[in-house]
Image 1 (cartoon, one colour):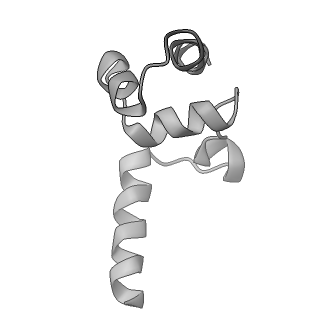
Image 2 (cartoon, rainbow, N blue to C red):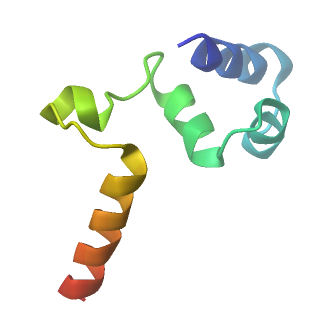
Length: 70
């Protein structure tokens, strides 16, 4: 949450671009866009569904399913 506050402050007070903010805070531009849209980070998958797996495991599963659906 603190990161989102810093991103929003940099954008508002300094007028730093999305690319500049992503480099400054070493985050993806998608994260910067999320922070600019909402002061609160989106909910995590574990909190949302009660999953007991690591995020990389979920990402691999999603990638596999997407390939199967193409």
